[in-house]
Length: 267
Ligand SMILES: O=C(O)CCC(=O)C(=O)O
Image (tube, rainbow, N blue to C red; front, side, top):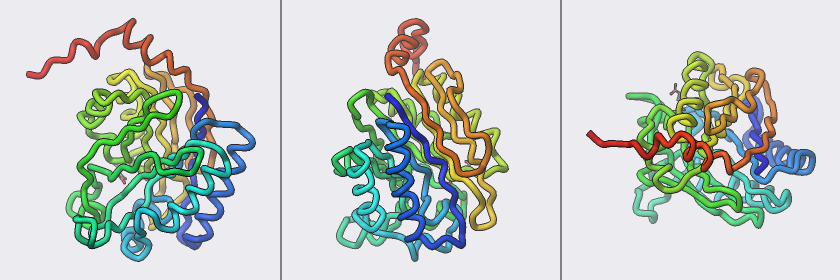
């Protein structure tokens, strides 16, 4: 399976609608040029993960403008598209009140929504996302033809039990869109490798480029194999595309040759 990670720049001066159009043409271009099976975008790329003031103003229903544009981009490009995440407004009739969620969307090559995932661990402690958004409560996996993807978002990376849950649900590739700040770049790279090694999976971790809301982004998108080897890593925090071929047999082989997952014990 070939995957392309699009490390998108979020610039406060670029209107959200222009960014949607720019990103959707980028999806089409990369699909044509690199022929990936799967394209991955970062977390909250419409607003920026740290643009807290924009969350409410730019929040959209699940099937809102980003959904429409990305469904079309997936269909036009004929790829599986993990469209990163959006600030989702659940809507009063959803049973979740009028809450906001940080929600990831995955589209099939036919432009159908294959799965969505509401970020479970919200970042910010007593401010920011942690108070502005609701917490998701359900794990999400989706089968693309070659593999089962397990979904997580940014701060989730710090919580290994979530990923064990995804492994138990059959995940072979973790897909992690993020808006990870430059200041903790070393944690990001470490966690991406740690999750790959401990769960014997591929990790596709797609960061954000540039600076928004005064927060320099790490960029540093990375693809790690089930042995913890880095297959590709963005050079820095500029906009960049990483394309990597994954051999999914490596997941089963690694688990067979070094069967540590079988030795799990709960104290
Ligand atoms: O955990 C971190 O250091 C960064 C998390 C984050 O920025 C996020 O979840 O948006």
